[in-house]
Amino acid sequence: MSLFIDNDCKTDDQQQLRNAIVVALLVVVFITAAGVIIFWERQVQPLDLALLFGMYTLNIFGIGLGYHRLFSHAAFQTRAWLRALLAIAACMTFQGTVTSWVSHHRAHHRYADKDGDVHSPNLHGKGFWGKILGLWHVHLGWLNKVNWTPPFPYVSDLLSDRVVQTVDRLYFLWVILSLLIPTIVGGTLTHSWEGALRGFLWGGIIRIVLVHQVTYSVNSICHLWGKRRFATDDQSTNSLLLALISFGEGWHHNHHAFPNSAKAGLMWWEIDLSWLCIMALERLGLVWNVKAPTQKQIELKRS
Image (cartoon, rainbow, N blue to C red):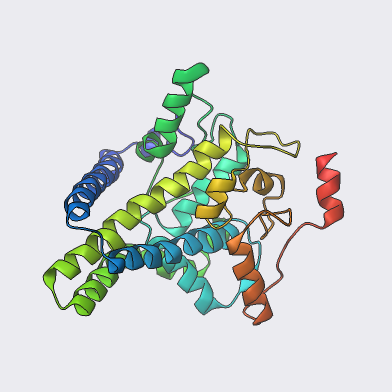
């Protein structure tokens, strides 16, 4: 039984919501595949890739800086308007509200790779098929097993947060806005309906699928394959490739060793764009109380 479901909350409405989420994501994947095939044959335009990259960058920073390092782990503090912008940027990924995402993520740390971890790929048997089932669960199966409606556990601090609650109430507005922005930009810059449709597909639908896969891969690949340097009670690993495309989130083993750190790339060569962004914001006076382990703490953790 899922950590977030008990007999009292297994209502038909909640199950229908879970089913609707899975169906919606499957539809999004289908549209993505069709769009790629259709428009690839007609050649991908530079504007298509620019809209994809621009919206992707906004979303990845929203997830990494906002949902993850700020709201889940309080790795730094910032002003209300910047907290709201980071929360909105993350909501645009269609990965759930702030409170739901944080609740699921905190459960992941509380029960990492043990019963109760909604994201673990290591609880579905051993061997090749166990890994396949684990990957399926992490990328899609878990969406139909957790609770997507309040109350959420582990987020009592966010329930009294006016910024978070306001952003959460308007969640679907941010999702719709994330589709409208690239559509309007594409149509305006090309003065055509085809440009608008290309913007909707590349900066909207395809971007959502890509961001989802990168986010889910941190929870799957980084608990199956990769390198470890610390003694942690889970099976987390580091992945250079995922760190590059997730702006630092791929240093997942480092993160499990120091979960409240705003810095995931702990070695000089571990590229962490989110950390660089946090340092820049700190220089500008926009963030403060930034948490990061000292070199001595890192060395002690390795021993």
